[in-house]
Image (cartoon, rainbow, N blue to C red; front, side, top):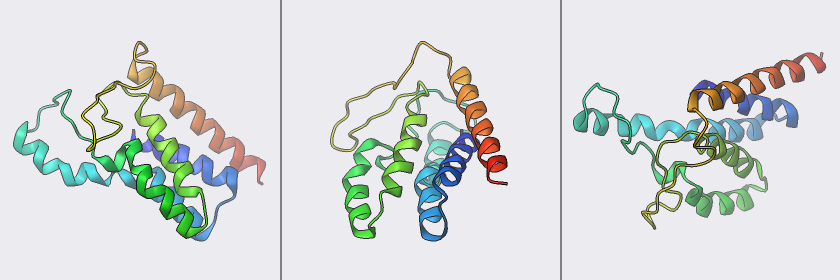
Length: 144
């Protein structure tokens, strides 16, 4: 899903004509918040090994809506809503996938599976990927 996050973020950057610091913030909150997967990889390997274990909780509070507790004040301090916008886009895409999520972690252990859980994840990702790819192409060629 990382490539889909990059495509959606790039579409947002193009649509909003972001440059400089705001472009950096867009990619940081639209894509780079997945860095916790790198941090959690050794724990996964220790617990599960190299096999694919569905249900392993990969996420941290960095990737849950509860992160808005620190993102909103950051936006106020920076004088821009770009982190909220791109973080929300990232979270919306993550919540399309059926794996377990804890929106209020670590303050609550309440678990949800996100949106459209009856639709296959690969289909949802393919639709978002295709829409983002087309949007990027449209925005790129319309700016020329």
